[in-house]
Length: 301
Image 1 (cartoon, rainbow, N blue to C red):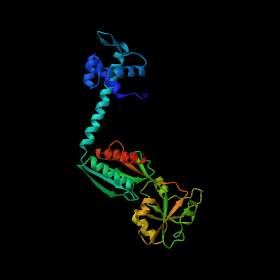
Image 2: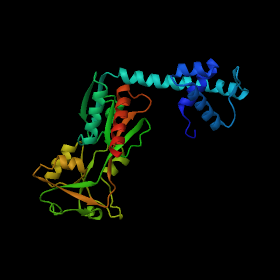
Image 3: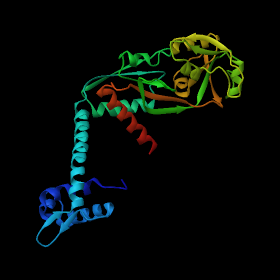
Image 4: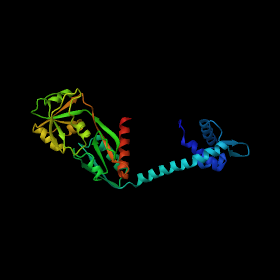
């Protein structure tokens, strides 16, 4: 709209009712000259007069009458939308159930704090989601929203804010030949048996977490399949295979003496995103999505 100011529209609407610059200014809590300035700015954007001014009267031009007829319902609808959003923000209570994969990182923790400050009557419950069932808890309404590893290509779900872009890390047993390395190249995964995820998760999603080949096309041997992160780490510690993790998850489990975590160079970063039910997300979930988005914007600023 070319930088259109809502204050200009408000000034025109009030003036159209009062047909008097002084009374319009009183209603808007501005001076008469300010009303005139706002109107001139609006007319400049439109390119033609909306109001006829004489020493005795103020009247709308034919274009002004037409513009008023179109503007009033649109403005009222916009105001109603804002009022509804404010009411929803004030009334969010009850329980917000958040599912997550991996660990609760700093971004998520700060978003939870922001949400709690904004909606003190809403209780938050956090539940870990199995690797083999990233989308099921949201679909079954066991949680209101979930923080899951990307990609997400489910028609009945909508992807909210995306965050936590991190390099991938290879978890191996301390007895593994790569355990002492500072980093490994993605092509070296052809020498590892990667632990995969049971097929209750979508195939495209499982391949993203445990690829079948390196970026250069070398096949990656398949290791055991697991349902949960803990199962995968236990098998890794037993040297039954290696596992790809995001950096924050690797750092969280860095205290485990039976495991080594080695950065992988040449793989796409891992990404986390908030997933909600399409068309039936709860008010709590929508409010949390806003809180998370604002947290990410603040961090990026």
